Length: 129
Image (tube, rainbow, N blue to C red; front, side, top):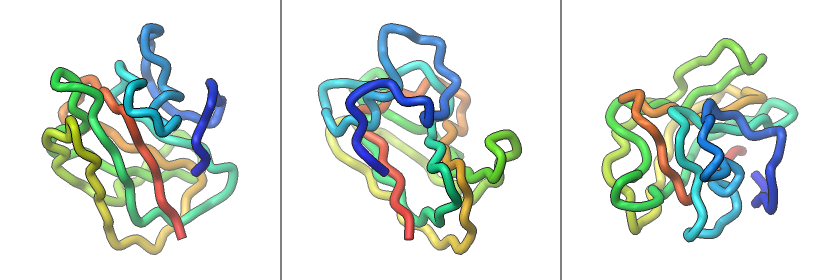
């Protein structure tokens, strides 16, 4: 997916926090962050097969994803399929890579925090084939 330089309507999230812009998760700048969502993702415009995510928590208070987090895909942006489950742990200060087997393609991809807690990310990237 592309690195972003400003707000983009293709970003999927449920954040109402205006202090941290969710597009900054995709700007490849570790100083900026998106905080305040339990999920964040991207509308790729057409179906792609994702097999890896790379992510990093923003700071020690907002470290990324918790236990039982999911990478999810959707064909319509409404109904979601769990493609991969992972335990996020503390990713502050280091990028985490989660690679997984997948053969399904979806237009919409997101990562949802399994604990329902607020996600704080400095970086998120989806990798497809």
